[in-house]
Length: 316
Image 1: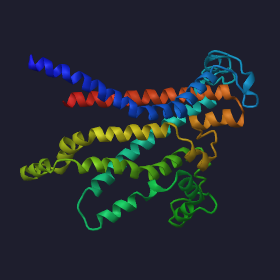
Image 2: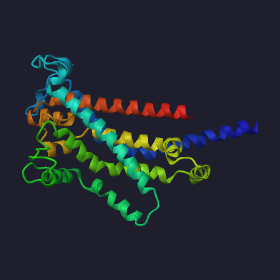
Image 3: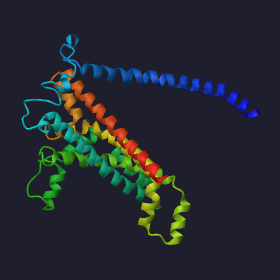
Image 4: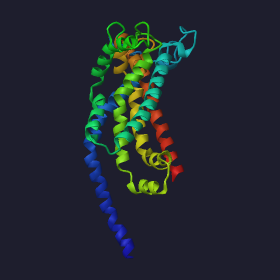
């Protein structure tokens, strides 16, 4: 009886705490609905219309025409070479290529930098602050800076490579289709690796020291300690860092637009949306592309989180 009475007394307290929690969350939820959910709903609605930026008031409902119609995103008779030869297909391929390459390289380099910064050495605090400088620079500023350095006529990168005899003529790093996308990836890796290193370093700082002391006493090789102890322990934080960075990489726009002027060889999905909505004025068509991008980002998040969860269950 006393146990049942205590459980009964907890229910009103739990209900009160739940109401208090919702009360505190209400302003944030209202703000989120106003600045995110409503624009998202409007974008999805526009994707089912033929709205034009010059006269959005006369938009007509076209159903899935912007997606699967005669000139929709996933069917266009003007491109006889196939879907991946269309501008939309190229933008999807470029976005996936950029996201996978940049996130992979940033994770590997960020892990290496974090492991180095986790060691005890003189001036470590100064080095940690210096490493964060690329990440602290606004993307537009860093893109413009690298655009000057990579210029094919007066850029310092070409000057150094020519002086070293590594190339015999200047290379148009941001204009040549053979180099443009990988140049953008390299600049993004330079800028965002400190972000990954910071998150991974925070996880390394929380690891218990007794595990490493025991491994040192037993004479376990450092590589084995890393694979068997360090990596499994920091995997949750590593997956969070990968998810955040993947979401950011899939919606890339500013870096590509500033460095390469959004040309056909590097145009991203966000760049395609901007071109169709702003330059061409096709709000309905651009909204459909924006909706597909939103769904791709959501699907990527779900897949990565499910993968991380399954790995945690296997480890358990």
